[in-house]
Image (cartoon, rainbow, N blue to C red):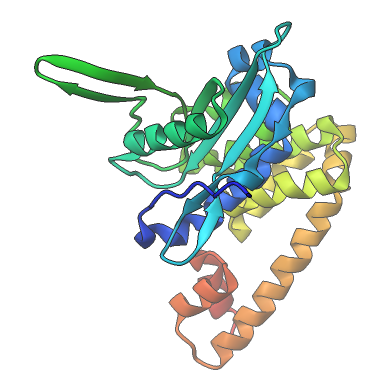
Length: 293
């Protein structure tokens, strides 16, 4: 008889965050070794990276009534130099949830009951709020039943400048979710592009991290112009490499198409907020296009 899927209820009002969770899952699943190396080096150094195999097809979470999704990232491996199987569970979290630490314990319990193997639980927070609980406890005034701990990565608390020399693809993509000011946006993208040229990834992986980055840090037209000036001031060879990135041309083509659609919508007198929402252009860019009419 086939094993029953593991189910657990989540807040169905947060289904708009599913896209963000999917992006994080795709990125971390693709670069799990690099992700652990740069953010959780103790885990990276103590597990057998060559023995990693996904088991996500067997574990599910109930997202909304009548539907399921896979538990975010679950892999099995062994401890380095030992014949001890372990499970690594990584759970990206896009929004603040006050009972998240309890949910992490539920995931741990379900995984342990199913596989009966040691589990390394990790939570990745990508929201603005400061909430970063790392422990779930169950106790009475007279007795402590349990204390469950898990590892955390709160991206907004990370300084992006600390990762730009890592030349790590997971870190490069996640620069877009780290702590930076509005004035640093151009600098963040410039260093991201420099990382891409140094890493020399294959086109598929290059597009993956570029698409992730652009989802969370998309420059305005004015900022793109500033970026190009910054690139021109780089050493000539490096500047040429950045300009020759295929994704740069693709994004420019997409941006041009977006502007053409926006101009047509403006000519028809449509609401500017609607235009920005439909085209995914920054409102400043939409306002500049309106001035050209």
